[in-house]
Amino acid sequence: MTPKTLYVSDLDGTLLLPDATLSAFTAETVRALTAEGMLFSYATARSWLTARKVTAALGALHLPVIVHNGASIVDAADGRVLQALYFTEPEKGFLFETLFDAGLSPMGYSRRGGGTSSHDEHVAVCTDRASRGLLAYLDSRRGDERFSETPRERLGDGRVYYFTCIVDDRREAEAAYRKVAGDGRFTVDLQHDIYSDCWYFEIMPKDATKANAAKRLAAMYGCGRIVCFGDGENDLSLFREADACYAVSNGADALKRAATAVIGPNTEDGTAKKLLELWKQEKEGNR
Image 1 (cartoon, rainbow, N blue to C red):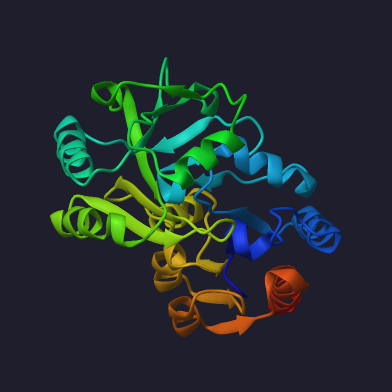
Image 2 (image 1 turned 180 degrees about the horizontal axis):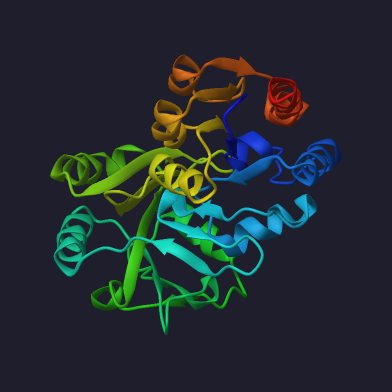
């Protein structure tokens, strides 16, 4: 009998189309498969609040979802925080010194109040050294009550779990990236954004990876296998830990080299088609 399997997909560039929507085929396929009993979730750099908007067509997912690259596992339906990791005060102090010395303007994501819900999320922003990319990003979030202009000395207030710096050129963040990555206390990523010409320098607590979150989610549901799908280098940790991993053909070369196989692109429902194939194999293996 095939072990119980957790299927985990990245969103942007993988399950979603280039305009950050779901095709009718992908949405219908995931709804049908989860109705039949497939244990499906997603792992994304997005927050729950933005992820739920772009995944609304999937309907009600039965499993929790992984957000902010593994910093939190939350209930898919109501955003309740089930598991979360946070920076310590010394870690925040080191990060501020490093990022400010590099001339960067980080955004700090925290939870206030009880911190038990994604609705408690707050994003502190200081724009005194903002890049064009950051200003464009903030303009796209107009009306989002989570965001507030904050003095730089207050960016670390609260239970912070995620920092990101948006820069126009990778070279602007490379020195700080190397210093933070070399410190050993953090999970970091410096990746080109597929929707803009900007670079995102993302920093999470050390154990906050998609891989670690997926393993915790698999344990919660008694799954002996993890099968994953992705397109970016921030999916590499998950690919290294999964029992099978599939990179969409529009994905990063490093991810495709690490993949079990390369599947069709996000523009051709590559992930949904592979899910159908794998689910058929799983059901046949359990007969």
